Amino acid sequence: MSQMPQQAALAKCPSCAEPLESGDLFCGACGYDLSVVPAPPQDHPTLTMTGSAAPGDGVDWPAPDPAGSAGTPPTAHRAADVPGTDSGGNPLHEQHPQEPQEAPAPGVRFDRPAEPEEYPLQAPDPRVAADVAVPEGAAKVCVACRAGQVDDDGYCENCGHAQPRERDHMERESGPVAAVSDRGLRHHRNEDSFGVGHTALPDGTPAAVAVVCDGVSSATRPDEASAAAARTAGDLLLAALPRGTHPQQAMHEAIVAAAQAVDALAGEPASAREHAPHQNAPACTIVGAVVTSGLLVVGWVGDSRAYWVPADRSAPAARLTEDDSWAAQMVAAGLMSEAEAYADERAHAITGWLGADAYELEPHTASFKPDRPGVVVVCTDGLWNYAETAEEMAEIVPLDAAARPLHGARVLVGHALDGGGHDNVTVALLPFPAPPQGAGSA
Image (cartoon, rainbow, N blue to C red; front, side):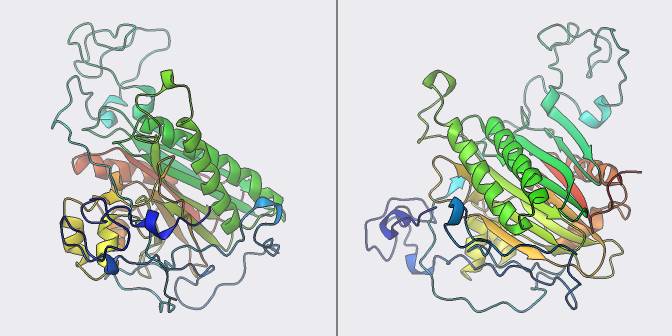
C-alpha cells in the first residue's frame, strides 16, 4: 500500500493518543518526546535460525517478480527483521544495521475494553463439557447442571444456563498441522479464528499452512473480521504454493488479501453494521506460518505470535515475531525494559491491525532455515499471556507435539484455561520439517 504522509502518521500521540499539530516535537498533553518513536525494523529474508545454514528445501523457487509487475509486490518485503530471541531474550544472531527511516504511524488501538469479572449464564470449562457424550437424536443435556434439557434457544430448561455455541470451542486437524480455539472462561464469545491446511509444492514435496486471527474486541463484529481474515489468507496460501509462488511472497499476498476481506466488512449496508465503518470498523490481528521440507516462513500484523521450539530442546526456543504494540514500541525505543512495558496497562494497545480504520497496512514477513526438527507454535495472546517468553513456551509444549499436533494444541489451550482463561485462546502447531503427505496426529 502507498506510504501515508508524515503529517497523517503523527496525527496522534503514541503514548496518550492526544491529537497533534504538524511539526510538534512534544505532546502537549503528556509531554511525550515524539522524536523517540521507534522506526520499524527492516526485513532480511531467509535467516538461519541456529548454527550454519541448512541445505535448501529442494524447491527451485522462481525469482520474485519486479515490484509492480502483474500487480503483485516483490518478495523482499519491507518488514521486521526478527531472527528470534533465545530463552534470555537475546537475539540468536547479529542484527543488521538499519538505515534511518521515517517514524511509523502512531495509531494505537486498545483491545482491552472493560469486562465484568464473570458473565451471566457463562458455560463451564469446555474441556469438561466436551466429555459429555450425547446420543444421536437424543435431547441435549445441559453442560452445567447435567440434568435439564436444552431448549431451541440454547438455554437449559432446568437452570437457565446458556449452552456453548459451535464457535466456543473449535478443533481441526489437516495432515500434519492442527489447531484448537476456545472462548476461554471470561469472554462471552469467541472472537478468534484460524485456518489450517496442507498441500504439495510443484516438485511434490509437502507444505503445511496455519493462519491464526484475533478479533479486536473494541471493534464492531470482531468475530466476523477474524473469520474472514483467516479464511481468505488460508485459501490464498493453499492456492499459491502449488503454483510455485515463493512462500514468503505468498504470505505477503495472503495478508494483503486478508486485509481487503476485513475492509470489505465495513462496506456492507448500514443495516448490517452497529456503527459507521470508519469510526469502529471490524478489525483483527493476523499471524501465519508456512512450513516446507527446509523452509519456515512467518507473517503477521498485530500482536499474535509465532514461536519456534526444537523437538529435542537441544537448542534455545525462539520467538519469530515482534508485536505491533505499545509495549514493543516502548522497549524498542529504550524507554522501558520488557518487564516494565508489559506490566503497564497500555501494554496490549496494538499499533497494527487489519481493518478499514487501520492507519497503514504493513505486513511483516520473515524466513528461517532451522537446522534441526521442531515445532512452530502460532497463537493469539490468549495463550502467550500465560507463557510469554520463548523459554516459557518451550516448557509447556509437549515433547511429542510435532508427532501429535492436535493433542499438543489441546494441551496448550488447557494451559491457558488453567491460568484463568481471561481471553479467547487459539493455537496451531506445525511440525518442521513438513512430514510427507498423510502424516498426522497419532
